[in-house]
Length: 337
Ligand code: NDP
Image (cartoon, rainbow, N blue to C red):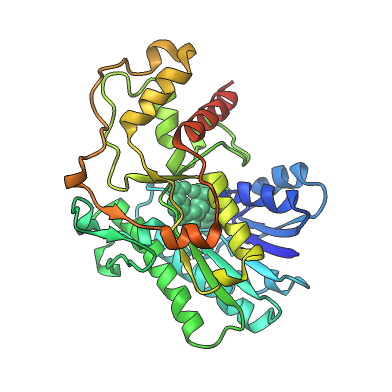
Protein backbone atom coordinates (compact mmCIF):
# COMPACT_ATOMS: atom_id res chain seq x y z
CA UNK A 1 0.00 0.00 0.00
CA UNK A 2 1.21 3.52 -0.71
CA UNK A 3 1.05 5.73 2.38
CA UNK A 4 1.61 9.47 2.81
CA UNK A 5 3.19 10.20 6.20
CA UNK A 6 3.62 13.85 7.21
CA UNK A 7 6.40 14.95 9.58
CA UNK A 8 8.64 11.94 8.89
CA UNK A 9 11.54 13.47 10.86
CA UNK A 10 9.57 13.35 14.13
CA UNK A 11 9.96 11.06 17.14
CA UNK A 12 6.68 9.17 16.68
CA UNK A 13 6.70 9.36 12.88
CA UNK A 14 10.10 7.66 12.69
CA UNK A 15 8.60 4.61 14.41
CA UNK A 16 5.63 4.68 12.03
CA UNK A 17 8.00 4.88 9.07
CA UNK A 18 10.06 1.97 10.37
CA UNK A 19 6.98 -0.21 10.90
CA UNK A 20 5.39 0.66 7.55
CA UNK A 21 8.64 -0.04 5.74
CA UNK A 22 9.10 -3.29 7.64
CA UNK A 23 5.68 -4.44 6.46
CA UNK A 24 6.60 -3.82 2.82
CA UNK A 25 4.56 -0.67 2.21
CA UNK A 26 5.65 2.25 0.02
CA UNK A 27 5.92 5.56 1.82
CA UNK A 28 6.01 9.17 0.74
CA UNK A 29 6.94 11.34 3.69
CA UNK A 30 7.12 15.11 4.17
CA UNK A 31 9.73 17.05 6.16
CA UNK A 32 10.49 20.76 6.49
CA UNK A 33 13.97 20.94 5.01
CA UNK A 34 16.69 19.19 2.99
CA UNK A 35 18.65 18.83 6.19
CA UNK A 36 15.81 16.74 7.68
CA UNK A 37 15.36 14.80 4.45
CA UNK A 38 18.94 13.58 4.04
CA UNK A 39 19.15 11.12 6.98
CA UNK A 40 15.80 9.57 6.03
CA UNK A 41 16.90 9.09 2.43
CA UNK A 42 20.12 7.53 3.68
CA UNK A 43 18.32 5.16 6.07
CA UNK A 44 15.77 4.05 3.46
CA UNK A 45 17.30 3.71 0.01
CA UNK A 46 14.14 2.13 -1.33
CA UNK A 47 10.34 2.41 -1.02
CA UNK A 48 10.60 5.76 0.77
CA UNK A 49 10.32 9.09 -1.01
CA UNK A 50 11.00 12.27 0.96
CA UNK A 51 9.30 15.50 -0.09
CA UNK A 52 9.95 18.96 1.36
CA UNK A 53 6.93 20.86 2.66
CA UNK A 54 8.53 23.91 4.27
CA UNK A 55 5.55 25.41 6.07
CA UNK A 56 2.44 23.43 7.01
CA UNK A 57 0.70 26.64 8.16
CA UNK A 58 0.55 27.66 4.52
CA UNK A 59 -3.03 26.87 3.33
CA UNK A 60 -1.84 25.19 0.11
CA UNK A 61 1.09 23.37 1.71
CA UNK A 62 0.01 19.86 0.78
CA UNK A 63 -1.62 20.56 -2.59
CA UNK A 64 1.21 19.09 -4.65
CA UNK A 65 2.32 16.13 -2.54
CA UNK A 66 -1.16 14.59 -2.34
CA UNK A 67 -1.15 14.37 -6.16
CA UNK A 68 1.56 11.73 -6.05
CA UNK A 69 -0.24 8.87 -7.79
CA UNK A 70 -1.74 5.96 -5.89
CA UNK A 71 -1.76 7.16 -2.27
CA UNK A 72 -4.38 5.10 -0.42
CA UNK A 73 -3.81 6.08 3.20
CA UNK A 74 -2.61 9.34 4.80
CA UNK A 75 -1.09 9.53 8.28
CA UNK A 76 -0.82 13.16 9.42
CA UNK A 77 1.56 13.47 12.38
CA UNK A 78 3.24 16.84 11.74
CA UNK A 79 2.26 19.40 14.38
CA UNK A 80 4.35 21.50 16.75
CA UNK A 81 4.98 19.90 20.14
CA UNK A 82 7.32 22.17 22.09
CA UNK A 83 7.01 25.05 24.52
CA UNK A 84 9.69 27.38 23.18
CA UNK A 85 7.40 29.76 21.33
CA UNK A 86 6.68 33.42 21.77
CA UNK A 87 3.39 33.68 19.90
CA UNK A 88 1.12 30.65 20.45
CA UNK A 89 -1.24 31.67 17.63
CA UNK A 90 1.27 31.71 14.79
CA UNK A 91 3.71 29.14 16.16
CA UNK A 92 1.32 26.47 17.52
CA UNK A 93 -2.33 26.98 16.61
CA UNK A 94 -1.81 27.88 12.94
CA UNK A 95 0.48 24.99 11.98
CA UNK A 96 -1.74 22.57 13.92
CA UNK A 97 -5.11 23.74 12.60
CA UNK A 98 -4.20 24.98 9.11
CA UNK A 99 -1.88 22.00 8.66
CA UNK A 100 -4.80 19.67 9.37
CA UNK A 101 -7.44 21.44 7.32
CA UNK A 102 -5.11 22.04 4.39
CA UNK A 103 -4.14 18.39 4.06
CA UNK A 104 -7.77 17.23 4.34
CA UNK A 105 -8.91 19.75 1.73
CA UNK A 106 -6.06 18.81 -0.62
CA UNK A 107 -6.92 15.10 -0.34
CA UNK A 108 -10.63 15.74 -0.94
CA UNK A 109 -9.84 17.81 -4.04
CA UNK A 110 -6.93 15.99 -5.61
CA UNK A 111 -6.67 12.46 -4.21
CA UNK A 112 -10.15 10.89 -4.33
CA UNK A 113 -8.64 7.39 -4.13
CA UNK A 114 -7.49 7.94 -0.52
CA UNK A 115 -9.67 5.69 1.63
CA UNK A 116 -8.55 6.65 5.12
CA UNK A 117 -6.83 9.50 6.93
CA UNK A 118 -5.33 9.03 10.39
CA UNK A 119 -4.51 12.15 12.39
CA UNK A 120 -2.19 12.14 15.39
CA UNK A 121 -4.28 13.96 17.93
CA UNK A 122 -3.61 13.68 21.67
CA UNK A 123 -4.95 13.10 25.17
CA UNK A 124 -4.58 16.90 25.15
CA UNK A 125 -7.80 16.96 23.10
CA UNK A 126 -9.57 14.66 25.60
CA UNK A 127 -8.59 16.04 29.01
CA UNK A 128 -10.13 18.92 30.92
CA UNK A 129 -7.69 21.05 32.91
CA UNK A 130 -10.38 21.82 35.51
CA UNK A 131 -10.87 18.13 36.34
CA UNK A 132 -7.40 16.57 36.47
CA UNK A 133 -7.60 16.17 40.26
CA UNK A 134 -11.25 15.08 40.25
CA UNK A 135 -11.79 11.37 40.98
CA UNK A 136 -15.39 11.60 39.74
CA UNK A 137 -14.17 12.42 36.20
CA UNK A 138 -13.55 9.54 33.79
CA UNK A 139 -11.91 10.44 30.48
CA UNK A 140 -12.72 8.15 27.57
CA UNK A 141 -12.93 8.18 23.76
CA UNK A 142 -15.95 10.50 23.87
CA UNK A 143 -14.36 13.15 26.11
CA UNK A 144 -13.43 16.53 24.64
CA UNK A 145 -11.20 19.22 26.07
CA UNK A 146 -13.44 22.32 26.44
CA UNK A 147 -10.47 24.66 25.76
CA UNK A 148 -11.01 27.47 23.24
CA UNK A 149 -8.77 29.84 21.34
CA UNK A 150 -9.44 32.44 24.07
CA UNK A 151 -7.49 30.30 26.55
CA UNK A 152 -4.19 30.13 24.66
CA UNK A 153 -2.42 32.72 26.80
CA UNK A 154 -3.18 30.89 30.08
CA UNK A 155 0.01 28.79 29.89
CA UNK A 156 2.26 27.17 27.29
CA UNK A 157 0.71 23.77 28.11
CA UNK A 158 -2.78 25.15 27.59
CA UNK A 159 -1.74 26.64 24.25
CA UNK A 160 -0.40 23.26 23.10
CA UNK A 161 -3.55 21.50 24.28
CA UNK A 162 -5.67 24.05 22.44
CA UNK A 163 -3.67 23.48 19.24
CA UNK A 164 -4.38 19.74 19.39
CA UNK A 165 -8.04 20.17 20.35
CA UNK A 166 -8.82 22.77 17.69
CA UNK A 167 -7.00 20.78 15.01
CA UNK A 168 -8.85 17.58 15.87
CA UNK A 169 -12.20 19.39 15.96
CA UNK A 170 -11.49 20.93 12.58
CA UNK A 171 -10.78 17.46 11.18
CA UNK A 172 -14.06 15.94 12.39
CA UNK A 173 -15.93 19.03 11.20
CA UNK A 174 -14.38 18.67 7.76
CA UNK A 175 -15.49 15.05 7.53
CA UNK A 176 -18.99 15.98 8.73
CA UNK A 177 -19.24 18.63 6.00
CA UNK A 178 -19.45 15.79 3.47
CA UNK A 179 -16.60 17.09 1.32
CA UNK A 180 -14.50 13.99 2.00
CA UNK A 181 -14.67 10.54 0.40
CA UNK A 182 -12.21 9.12 2.94
CA UNK A 183 -13.00 8.26 6.52
CA UNK A 184 -11.10 9.58 9.51
CA UNK A 185 -9.42 8.04 12.57
CA UNK A 186 -7.66 9.98 15.29
CA UNK A 187 -5.02 8.55 17.59
CA UNK A 188 -5.08 10.27 21.00
CA UNK A 189 -2.01 9.28 23.03
CA UNK A 190 -1.02 10.82 26.35
CA UNK A 191 2.69 11.22 27.30
CA UNK A 192 4.76 9.20 24.83
CA UNK A 193 8.08 7.66 25.85
CA UNK A 194 10.27 5.38 23.77
CA UNK A 195 13.57 4.82 22.03
CA UNK A 196 14.80 7.33 19.49
CA UNK A 197 14.32 6.10 15.92
CA UNK A 198 14.64 9.51 14.23
CA UNK A 199 17.86 11.31 13.38
CA UNK A 200 18.97 13.28 16.44
CA UNK A 201 21.81 15.77 16.11
CA UNK A 202 22.36 15.72 19.88
CA UNK A 203 20.45 15.04 23.08
CA UNK A 204 19.82 18.81 23.30
CA UNK A 205 17.28 18.42 20.53
CA UNK A 206 15.40 15.54 22.16
CA UNK A 207 11.63 15.57 21.54
CA UNK A 208 9.49 17.14 24.27
CA UNK A 209 7.99 14.00 25.84
CA UNK A 210 11.34 12.19 26.22
CA UNK A 211 13.04 15.28 27.68
CA UNK A 212 12.41 14.26 31.29
CA UNK A 213 14.39 11.05 30.74
CA UNK A 214 17.34 13.05 29.43
CA UNK A 215 17.17 15.26 32.55
CA UNK A 216 17.08 12.17 34.76
CA UNK A 217 20.09 10.41 33.20
CA UNK A 218 22.08 13.66 33.25
CA UNK A 219 21.69 13.93 37.01
CA UNK A 220 19.14 16.75 37.18
CA UNK A 221 16.83 14.77 39.48
CA UNK A 222 19.49 14.00 42.11
CA UNK A 223 18.22 16.44 44.75
CA UNK A 224 14.51 16.21 44.06
CA UNK A 225 12.33 14.32 41.59
CA UNK A 226 10.20 16.87 39.72
CA UNK A 227 6.40 16.73 39.65
CA UNK A 228 4.97 14.20 37.20
CA UNK A 229 2.73 16.91 35.76
CA UNK A 230 -0.99 16.74 35.09
CA UNK A 231 -1.27 14.04 32.45
CA UNK A 232 -0.33 10.99 34.64
CA UNK A 233 -0.84 8.49 31.83
CA UNK A 234 1.56 7.32 29.15
CA UNK A 235 2.20 5.05 26.15
CA UNK A 236 5.26 3.73 24.30
CA UNK A 237 6.02 5.29 20.90
CA UNK A 238 6.20 1.85 19.27
CA UNK A 239 2.61 1.19 20.38
CA UNK A 240 1.50 4.62 19.14
CA UNK A 241 3.11 3.80 15.81
CA UNK A 242 1.46 0.37 15.69
CA UNK A 243 -1.89 2.04 16.39
CA UNK A 244 -1.40 4.34 13.37
CA UNK A 245 -0.44 1.44 11.12
CA UNK A 246 -3.27 -0.83 12.28
CA UNK A 247 -5.91 1.88 12.26
CA UNK A 248 -4.74 3.22 8.91
CA UNK A 249 -4.20 0.02 6.97
CA UNK A 250 -5.38 -3.06 8.78
CA UNK A 251 -8.62 -2.47 10.69
CA UNK A 252 -11.48 -1.22 8.49
CA UNK A 253 -13.79 -0.95 11.56
CA UNK A 254 -11.52 1.73 13.05
CA UNK A 255 -13.05 4.26 10.64
CA UNK A 256 -14.75 7.18 12.38
CA UNK A 257 -13.17 6.45 15.76
CA UNK A 258 -11.03 8.33 18.23
CA UNK A 259 -8.48 5.88 19.62
CA UNK A 260 -7.34 6.68 23.14
CA UNK A 261 -4.04 4.78 23.24
CA UNK A 262 -2.67 4.54 26.77
CA UNK A 263 -0.91 1.81 28.74
CA UNK A 264 -1.92 3.40 32.05
CA UNK A 265 -0.67 5.50 34.93
CA UNK A 266 2.96 6.41 35.56
CA UNK A 267 4.88 8.74 37.83
CA UNK A 268 8.29 10.35 37.84
CA UNK A 269 8.96 8.60 41.17
CA UNK A 270 8.40 5.22 39.47
CA UNK A 271 10.54 6.33 36.52
CA UNK A 272 13.42 7.22 38.85
CA UNK A 273 13.07 3.90 40.72
CA UNK A 274 13.24 1.86 37.50
CA UNK A 275 16.33 3.72 36.27
CA UNK A 276 17.99 3.34 39.68
CA UNK A 277 17.33 -0.43 39.62
CA UNK A 278 18.18 -1.11 35.96
CA UNK A 279 21.12 1.25 35.36
CA UNK A 280 23.46 0.96 38.36
CA UNK A 281 26.24 2.31 36.13
CA UNK A 282 24.62 5.75 36.26
CA UNK A 283 25.57 5.83 39.94
CA UNK A 284 25.35 9.23 41.61
CA UNK A 285 23.45 10.78 38.72
CA UNK A 286 20.25 8.96 39.65
CA UNK A 287 18.34 10.04 42.78
CA UNK A 288 19.00 7.74 45.75
CA UNK A 289 16.17 5.76 47.28
CA UNK A 290 14.24 8.09 49.58
CA UNK A 291 14.72 11.23 47.46
CA UNK A 292 11.28 12.82 47.42
CA UNK A 293 9.07 14.08 44.65
CA UNK A 294 7.16 12.99 41.56
CA UNK A 295 4.79 10.64 43.38
CA UNK A 296 1.50 9.69 41.76
CA UNK A 297 -1.40 11.60 43.39
CA UNK A 298 -3.61 9.29 45.46
CA UNK A 299 -6.73 7.78 43.90
CA UNK A 300 -8.91 10.41 45.57
CA UNK A 301 -6.86 13.19 43.97
CA UNK A 302 -6.70 12.17 40.35
CA UNK A 303 -8.94 11.62 37.32
CA UNK A 304 -9.98 8.19 36.07
CA UNK A 305 -9.75 6.99 32.49
CA UNK A 306 -11.34 4.25 30.42
CA UNK A 307 -9.97 3.26 27.02
CA UNK A 308 -11.56 -0.19 26.80
CA UNK A 309 -13.18 0.70 23.45
CA UNK A 310 -9.74 1.45 21.98
CA UNK A 311 -8.24 -1.72 23.44
CA UNK A 312 -11.05 -3.71 21.80
CA UNK A 313 -10.57 -2.10 18.36
CA UNK A 314 -6.77 -2.30 18.25
CA UNK A 315 -6.00 -5.48 20.22
CA UNK A 316 -2.47 -4.26 20.99
CA UNK A 317 -0.78 -5.62 24.10
CA UNK A 318 0.74 -2.39 25.42
CA UNK A 319 4.46 -2.35 26.19
CA UNK A 320 4.88 -2.19 30.00
CA UNK A 321 6.37 0.88 31.66
CA UNK A 322 9.59 -0.73 32.90
CA UNK A 323 10.43 -2.08 29.44
CA UNK A 324 9.67 1.25 27.83
CA UNK A 325 11.87 3.10 30.32
CA UNK A 326 14.76 0.65 29.94
CA UNK A 327 14.63 0.76 26.13
CA UNK A 328 14.38 4.55 26.12
CA UNK A 329 17.28 5.10 28.51
CA UNK A 330 19.47 2.64 26.58
CA UNK A 331 18.71 4.55 23.41
CA UNK A 332 19.47 7.91 25.03
CA UNK A 333 22.77 6.65 26.43
CA UNK A 334 23.71 5.43 22.95
CA UNK A 335 23.09 8.94 21.63
CA UNK A 336 25.07 10.52 24.47
CA UNK A 337 28.21 8.63 23.43
P1 NDP B 1 8.31 15.75 17.39
O1 NDP B 1 8.57 17.14 17.81
O2 NDP B 1 9.45 14.82 17.29
O3 NDP B 1 7.53 15.73 16.02
C1 NDP B 1 6.77 16.78 15.54
C2 NDP B 1 6.73 16.68 14.04
O4 NDP B 1 5.97 17.75 13.50
C3 NDP B 1 8.12 16.79 13.43
O5 NDP B 1 8.15 16.06 12.24
C4 NDP B 1 8.22 18.28 13.16
O6 NDP B 1 9.16 18.61 12.16
C5 NDP B 1 6.82 18.56 12.69
N1 NDP B 1 6.48 19.97 12.87
C6 NDP B 1 6.37 20.63 14.03
N2 NDP B 1 6.06 21.91 13.80
C7 NDP B 1 5.98 22.06 12.47
C8 NDP B 1 5.72 23.16 11.61
N3 NDP B 1 5.44 24.36 12.10
N4 NDP B 1 5.75 22.94 10.29
C9 NDP B 1 6.04 21.72 9.80
N5 NDP B 1 6.29 20.64 10.55
C10 NDP B 1 6.26 20.82 11.87
O7 NDP B 1 7.24 15.19 18.44
P2 NDP B 1 6.32 13.89 18.41
O8 NDP B 1 6.82 12.88 17.49
O9 NDP B 1 6.09 13.57 19.81
O10 NDP B 1 4.96 14.49 17.84
C11 NDP B 1 4.30 13.95 16.71
C12 NDP B 1 2.82 14.15 16.85
O11 NDP B 1 2.36 13.44 17.98
C13 NDP B 1 2.38 15.60 17.04
O12 NDP B 1 1.18 15.78 16.31
C14 NDP B 1 2.11 15.67 18.53
O13 NDP B 1 1.19 16.69 18.85
C15 NDP B 1 1.55 14.28 18.77
N6 NDP B 1 1.56 13.81 20.15
C16 NDP B 1 2.76 13.61 20.81
C17 NDP B 1 2.76 13.16 22.11
C18 NDP B 1 4.03 12.90 22.86
O14 NDP B 1 3.99 12.76 24.09
N7 NDP B 1 5.17 12.82 22.20
C19 NDP B 1 1.50 12.91 22.82
C20 NDP B 1 0.32 13.11 22.03
C21 NDP B 1 0.37 13.55 20.75
P3 NDP B 1 10.73 18.84 12.51
O15 NDP B 1 11.32 17.47 12.64
O16 NDP B 1 11.25 19.58 11.34
O17 NDP B 1 10.76 19.63 13.78
